[in-house]
Image (cartoon, rainbow, N blue to C red; front, side, top):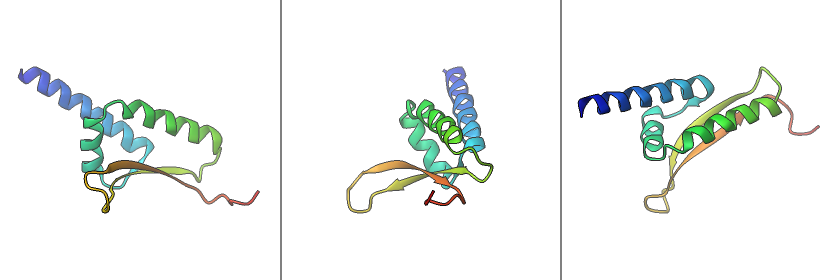
Length: 91
């Protein structure tokens, strides 16, 4: 049983290390807990990062990831991914 726990810990640690390389993690502990409860999101977040970097071909683009709770709706939680760039919104 201990082996499975360590294996799971190692996998979760690697996931968070990888995420921290492609996203600026605003509140990493909460993000880790949310992703551990919603493991399918890991592949989605990786895909989002790839697509954003293909679309915004610029060194001045970075992504942040933040765990947020809706204060008006009990138990409503979500991850928010934000694209930061100094590119103009007007073409």
